[in-house]
Length: 73
Length: 87
Image (cartoon, rainbow over all chains, first blue to last red):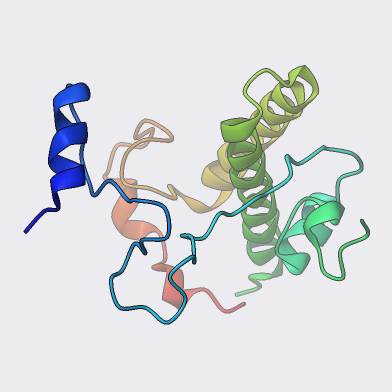
């Protein structure tokens, strides 16, 4: 069952998929933290610098020193 | 039979293949990176040469895809299975 507020916003938007949330309404109703947002992941773009040799790369499991733990940056 | 040279060549092919996969993944997110493209291409050339050299010495690595069948018989059946090679 949808709320009245959702139905009225439907008329303004031609197409919408998924629930429209009112402020303070949680994505999953009944959760403990109503203001909780869905997760957002951030991954910085990789910058290629030095490379391992093919021999080192296969042993290490990566060609890129910047992706080998402990991360140098 | 001494398989040390065969294993060494196979290892080199594995190493070059791994570099190819790594550069492929990098290029997926950096498709305009000219340095990475050049590295991918030079590594690719090295890999193909290594595979050619291996196949001339020890027979085909794949039943099709890398090389034509150069002998008068079907040489694929003479190649060892991967699990028959002692690393």
